[in-house]
Image (cartoon, rainbow, N blue to C red):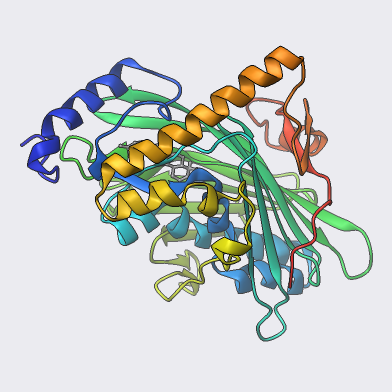
Length: 377
Ligand code: CLR
């Protein structure tokens, strides 16, 4: 049955939304979707998913050699996937359409220092509206761990599913106790959004992503859904190979939303069945007009309370204001300035580390954090 999970009054609007997805390829953000599938959460909040298990992030600093550091990075990375790709299903009942951030939208947050793990800070800026591009910076300065990255999406429609190719990458930098640093290039997996027909979308990860260390250690992570490897959805298999060979020294397999094990020893590797820690943000009144939750609060309240007239009126207000801004800039011959990031056409870390595993594409642009913001304690 078409749209089993779709409210009766929104069935025809869901059907035409699906039709428009099938015909528009590239950027879904501007398509009008029926209210039941809207989330009221902006994409600028999503980078917080990288750190909802802050102790796994800080554990990276405590690893004692190159090999165990690569294992710690892989363990942290796999443990972020549940938050990244299934948390809307758990919180909101299904995958939903997030709010499309405006240019210059900001999101700041932190995770407190507990048990000596150090405080972790998060800073996000929407650096492009068309196409939507989100840049982020996450740091645990007392542990000497820094993550920077950006992401955008290219979407297409195939066999009833939305295929999302993630554009962008992340770079993790670890300060070493004896001086010097280690860098890790992290590529992003492909997504398939299934369950559209029934109106209850969910994400499955597909193909392969990589984590390349500057020491030469490489993690190759393969994603499979129902009917492959173990037959379970959200399955993965990760091989970690030493410098100069593709033969895996370690293999880990399991499901990224539950548990995984070392294939050789059977020892537990990741376990995300326990609670995660959501990012702490300042109260709305203490936020600036550009901060995501404050900016979208009228829309979010409307969606949450089922008052969609208010939600769409508030949304139009924000969009009109943005259009006016762009017109004024064009008239004055000025350009919007990014607040926290510098855009570079080619990321030297991506180029250098990407070569080691023949990354495709061979180079990518990047957004470099200017270190011009101090998070309030
Ligand atoms: C953004 C970057 C995060 C991981 C992530 C998770 C879910 C993705 C999102 C990214 C991009 C936007 C996305 C979303 C799932 C659905 C949504 C692809 C990659 C699209 C735009 C909405 C489709 C509409 C249907 C749900 C109806 O680290």
